[in-house]
Length: 452
Ligand SMILES: Cc1cc2nc3c(=O)[nH]c(=O)nc-3n(C[C@H](O)[C@H](O)[C@H](O)COP(=O)(O)OP(=O)(O)OC[C@H]3O[C@@H](n4cnc5c(N)ncnc54)[C@H](O)[C@@H]3O)c2cc1C
Ligand code: SF4
Image (cartoon, rainbow, N blue to C red; front, side, top):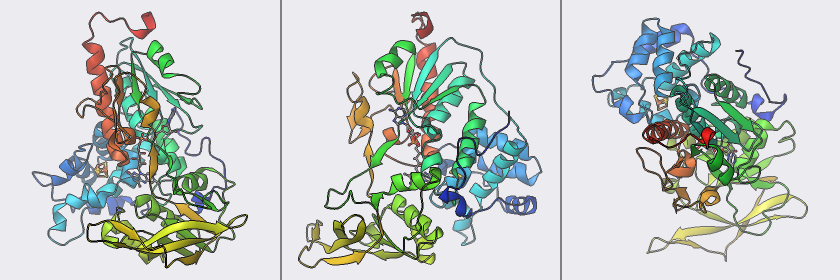
């Protein structure tokens, strides 16, 4: 099968103008980096990887010229190992636990070595896994993001028929619509989808569960249902002017920038991004990379309270991004479109509460205002299904199996963990597949859905 990295994507998308920040290593660079690995006996890096990839083994295989074997080690543990190689925040995961950090030497570039191995396997069309002997069981998966893709792949290996229902026209979830283009572009995400799907499961794009088919339909026609629905749209700020043209959610803007050729930043000279998390940092870095001259983050608290990664913030500052701390947005201003943001100073009182001083407002001029203060939770969509419990917007699951309070429903990824990383979604999707398999293979006497 030919894996087209561009299938379904239009030319001229803005993300294509943003260069890769960590380009593919050459063979010489990869072997030289692999040879730095100390192959620690207790390998703290393995513990730090949510999918438990045997990192010293895959690195040793690169060092000895067995790149195919290296890719197999990676993909056996994590079938989304190709995108994870580029998008994982390795500084706080595997590479963050590398013993070289204690020696004050650069950690092994685990992500880049991983990408070197998986790219080799992809380019050479190597496949390591096959469909299991058919069990006659059929599972519906809702959403085609990393969680469902990992779950569907594992279910197929175990012999079950997996069918993913995805509301969008493109599969891949936030790997295709949200991740910063300097880490992974949509085309490469779709290439991974094609690679993973080639084992033999179905993706029905453009089918929104709850609108085009109901959960009752899925229950009737399948033996189990996996929920990999992720998070919802950007949270609103609930302040005047936020619906003006030129003010939008950061995740929505990033999706247009990555997938919609009509998206443009022409004429944008001053952009403000409200928030202090990773999405806010991604958005400011992307705007700078697209050539917007003045880009400022507006955050209600100080640097120490920011939830975004410190290493990403440091890079944003190096790239010329400014940050305005201790400032709360009060209103987006403008007539037909955005002209600025009214802000007020903030402080923390003796009880630790944030206090906004609305007597001293100031105006920040802007042509674009992005809201990056979080995403709504979609879990409410399934809150009516008997037995499914939703806790602070997350679907409550058994951590070992991914099973919800309804025995035939499982969940994983952002909708269950509240919003973590791609690698967590991949780990939880695979674990849920094993949970579903255990349920279906111990259900002696229960007729498969196909026979009901
Ligand atoms: C802007 C941004 C940047 C990020 N950058 C990184 C990064 O650099 N590295 C990293 O590791 N993580 C990053 N993340 C987090 C990461 O993308 C997520 O943790 C991961 O994608 C979660 O996977 P998922 O499968 O749970 O959900 P998603 O990727 O959100 O996929 C859910 C899918 O379900 C579909 N869906 C929802 N409801 C329905 C329905 N009713 N019917 C049918 N389909 C439905 C959606 O259309 C979507 O395709 C980022 C997140 C954001 C928002
Ligand atoms: S999947 Fe991510 S965390 Fe795990 S070894 Fe690879 S880069 Fe590191």
